[in-house]
Length: 448
Ligand code: 2IT
Image (tube, rainbow, N blue to C red; front, side):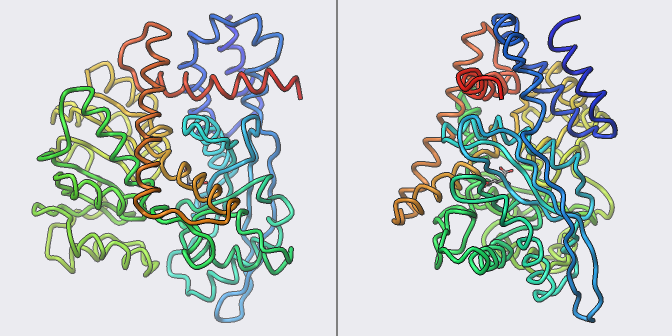
């Protein structure tokens, strides 16, 4: 048996009931086959693959909180600190009802390679809770965040682990989390969290960064193919922060977004999501209703209850911006019939491995989410730099750095593919490039 398949098998045995984590382990380890083949002896001697799939630590804690009726609830909190070989742990917090340890481990593993790709010194971590923000009042969200931080604070710090937002955690939640952290530790360490408000150490462009970065990365891919965004039609999923940033940048660059989605279904807006309609997405998110139908009701467009746009809507580019595994094999089959040439993966692991393989085999360009959505965490890295230097860059400065980073990621991917004589397989290239720096650092630092 090969080293890679051995490690996959051992990891599967050690992590029963964790299909999402195994999905990303398989994707990453399979993609780095050429690197492992070239360095097998060195990697085996350093138990490198065995160590890279095992998180440094996995913290699980109780989060009790009181609702507005005075009734107490108990949720589960997580922080999985996956790898800090190249920098302090860094990664978002996700509040969503179906969050499990499996979700946290898949996201933490992905984050390790994503953060490496940004070229900034950040290790990988992820955290969150099975708390469901849907329908919660502001006061409930605040009490939950405070209770969550009552435990999390002892595991994080500006040089140790720097959480940020993810699904269900935006500027409001980061504010409550930071307020409680400050209350507990006393020092004004605003470098402990990113995605902060502008009045207390946030970075301009951070809210837009994931969506902007995803569009900049796509632009590099289209340039590579001799095309551009202007005049192209986009089907998106989600309507949160990431989809919002993407809509802003796509419409600025002359593209047209015709779908958004939520847990309730998807909307089809033939005129395109632009102008005030993009601003309305922020209101939808702030309402905590989690219903995309609100958009259709307000702007009088079509709503398809319980459905996804994949394979149902013809577009030049698909951009899933919602959650993991929303594109499965049968969606991919429908996509091929419609002839969708590019799948720009924005959410973390939105497509199953089988669906990616089928699409790639049929000539669809699949961009890897760990590269495409890296602009969010990259801009978090820029926020950390501004915090530690006690300064604040302009919008133009941050945006220019973000564009440079996204182009740099595409260049790194092409460089890794060239180095191994591979064709334009962006998924393989992103994993090879992200892995290299982490592997070098882990070997340099000895076995620990
Ligand atoms: O998935 C991600 O990269 C994020 N949720 C952002 C993480 C961060 O630290 O900004």
